[in-house]
Image (cartoon, rainbow, N blue to C red; front, side, top):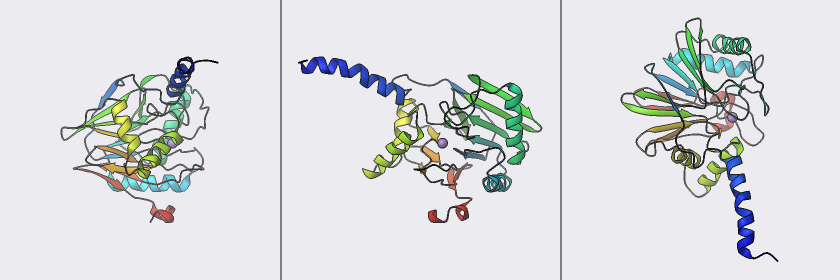
Length: 259
Ligand SMILES: [Mn+2]
């Protein structure tokens, strides 16, 4: 029989492995930061899970939203595309073709469009770093492995997908659900803010859970999700950063149960 301490010694590495596999950034400190500036308003979206050649209704609502608020900058906090659990590595030509489709379908003009890539599923695999494209009058940046930092009226807003906190969206969503059960709103976002060592007075905005929410006190927010998932309904929500920060509900007619 192994003594209890021996069992503990055996279990600890296993536990560390599980934690590392599911929570890849725990204990690793801040991510590298990419700073962008484009003025306001900023439209924030996440988890659109778009499939080229499908999703006509979603694209119609998104196009209307962009037309109505005429944002200077559009940030998508990951899972812009739906390439499943083993997304492909794309050539530069294929990447350009894909983003040209995005620009056309969303009716982007003169906007600065930032796509924060999710790292483990859904978004295509792009080279690590910052990819810049000019597509017509739209400037586009795909960020891989960076926190996006944007200054608005001397406030700092950080954007990320959320998968550095918990690799799988469903785990992130379960952490959020557990939080609500014990009456802590936006638990996943609050934990992520700590994991990524974002200062208290700065904002952290992420997606990944597909739940939407905004906490002015803790300065965390999640624009919600537009993808269909067996365990999570789309919220069809967005967020606008202008003189303040607020949720937008552009598509409640697509999701009447949420009214
Ligand atoms: Mn997602």
